[in-house]
Amino acid sequence: MTQQQTQGTLFKNGRIGLGASEGSPDAIYTENGRIRAIGTSADLELQLSGRSYEVVDWAGANVLPGLTDSHMHLSMQGVKLAALDFSETASKEQMLWQIRERAAKTPEGEWIFGLNWNENAFTPAEAPTIDELDEAAGSRPLYLTRTCFHAFLANREAFRRAGVTADTPDPLSGALGRGESGELNGWIYEEASKLLTAVQPKPDYADKKAAIRRACEYALSLGLTAAHTEDLRYLGGIDVMRRIHRELREEGLHFRSHHLIFHDYLDEAEALGLTAGDGDEWLRIGAVKIFSDGAIGGRTALLNAPYHDAPTTSGMAIHARERLHAITARARSLGFPIAVHAIGDGAADLTLGAMEAYPLAGITALPDRFIHAQVLDAALLERMTKLQLIADIQPRFVVSDFPWVLDRVGPERTDYLYAWKKMIDAGIVCAGGSDAPIEPLNPLLGLHAAVARRRPDRAEPAEGYLPQERLSLQQALWLFTEGSALAAAEAGERGRIQVGFAADFTVLDRDIAAGEQALTEARTLMTVVNGKVAYRA
Image (cartoon, rainbow, N blue to C red; front, side):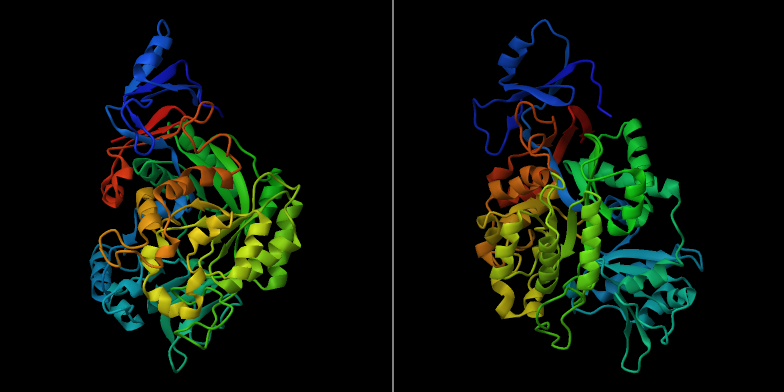
């Protein structure tokens, strides 16, 4: 559905682009969601004399092309905004205190959920034991999702509700954590989580819609005009997803969304007659989402050789090679590219093998997407360049994963670790995202991580981790603008402030080209989507 506008809008008195100088164009005229003219305020007002139009005064604010997060999860971001959040938790003791505090407010027997704990960031670096979780939650079942969303913690009451005991076998694509004598230790890995989620209370339609609304409104407040998201595992179906976004749009929420289709929902996509690229300017269908491995933090990312700090494991493949190829073939037959979560170099090899076995050429204009690409090597990089895929990278992972990731993978793999600069120099198109709620949704924090490769609240290491992979601010901004547009086959529509492009703008209170500090201190004053003010501070 195209947003109808009865008249145009003149946005004036802005500082347009990075490092805008005096005398540069400071005004943009839009009609029907598109940029129709760019110039000085005085010139455009003269050209528009005698016409009826709205005026929005940016009052000297700094204006960027509308920022897009190329990889996140709106549904889980919305859930996070209402759940127990451990993102800023600094120790096991603080985590347990938060659980006790929530338990005191939760009726006995009701579930407690929490997100985003990361024991590697704790001092000391250890997670709560199952005994400690039992004490903190009392009689309430407890289920906590690690920051990577590939490992979980539960207490004994949660296992009891699920009927899971020490005798329960591990599923093919997951595992239950066990102590030395085989007893459950509270940890759950990958698809073993389904044993517990199956008995948890299910959100109804109103809950699902509220979660998406919360996430979209939050994204707009951070200057995001659009997001590429994968939500079907929470929402439960493509039709439900489309209905929620349609209703929110009709209720006045202006936010663009590009949706990856989790592979379990391909039958529904076929029944609905959907294929990649379907939709409109507000909601479009994208690639088929597949997981190839897990995450480095929980040592479930698949490596070609054992972990440096755990030589007995090389991680976990979510799908055997034959199954990954079968899913890819099915996606191709329905006109879809694939978007594969692949963190380790072993998973990268599996993923590229599937893409090579089933070429995308001639099937759709949308590209295949290689999500995360954290551990690579020279040969893998060369294969990526030949496939003309999009690399979905998450700059904030450096903030969360360093320095402990260096011990996980060992010195022999650091040359191609989070190797963004190498990928870009090789000609691989990269798009920038957050993987929220795993990392903060704020795109300015993603920009900072791309250029600094260290935490914004610490001066060390001054040069950043593996500084040869640092990006310029222009390169970093490109990830969240033109890179994201290319990932959605929208290069001629979005990502630039240019006549004919969508009138999507991120308006900040300062010029982020002023230095790293400006990136961490800048605040969103306004978010404009399709020529409409979708958020105003």
